[in-house]
Length: 450
Image (cartoon, rainbow, N blue to C red; front, side):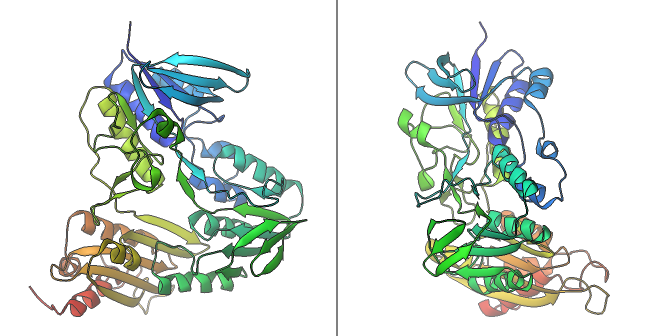
């Protein structure tokens, strides 16, 4: 009888593992259990579905359950929620939601890709039908139905992280009045406060009412009750962050790591033999701080899922770690970050110099050139690059990838200054904004040459 691999979770971290396991082991029986109705979808695209930039929900689905069955011989079972893992018996307890029954399923190999769960505090009125999360496509469908079913004048977005900002943009595009509330003193806690202040100014410029340092206390009759008063709302979107969905693993006795995520090694193996994990439920290694971290990003989920799948099939693959490189956009204004922010460097106990440059997106004289702020952090003593950020319009966000590559390669600030980057007045200034920031960091380090 063929060995059986069971995959818990049908999105990136799960199906990347399942398909790579199939490539390596044609003989393997593979069953994937997903408690929702969809597999391999882009949750990151939900704000753009709501805004109307993406026309249909189906466009966010990369592969359907039937495509996995037909093309990869993976037995995908949607609407199946795993409620328990018995490691000794190598058996799962599964609730078939549509049949309203419980069944048991044995496994030889197990891959846990349960993802992350949204932070949803137990506040009065939070379960009202006009208050929406945006974690999966079922959430997206409910939100879209309400948006298209009635006129939405006032929207309150709770949470000023990536999802919160992107949902604010979605409702700006729909012509609604948007109020953004966050208990933190800045939007986007993974960038430096002064650059985050630029983000606040941009939001205000688009008409968003930004209330920072404000705590939501409950929800009344179409009002949001906060420590700063009440805000009217036809609709509320919750974007208060996520935490690893590791309860199943914890209850089964698997070791947990950073922020309560499932602890894995470089091969995505958990603390139990034959049990792997990947994606937003698992921890990973930060290449700069050299610490275990939990970073919930689709890029990380796909890469770690691939590594797990290769190993589940008997191959050998490792995942070196992450930099936390991320991008977001508010209308035309883009924000990119990678490596450590100043707060993160402080927490890691690293001494650093900061280089900042106010530059332009193209040659300053070229039509369409826009102001850009770039920042680079470099370690004192070694000059090693630690991280950086870039903010501005005119599609500058992807420039952060240059810095991410430099970090991965262990380059110094001076190395970044000397990189031979492309230049054309219509596309870039003579000195890339990040190189100018690196020049400033080199000066702060007291080094102007090798």
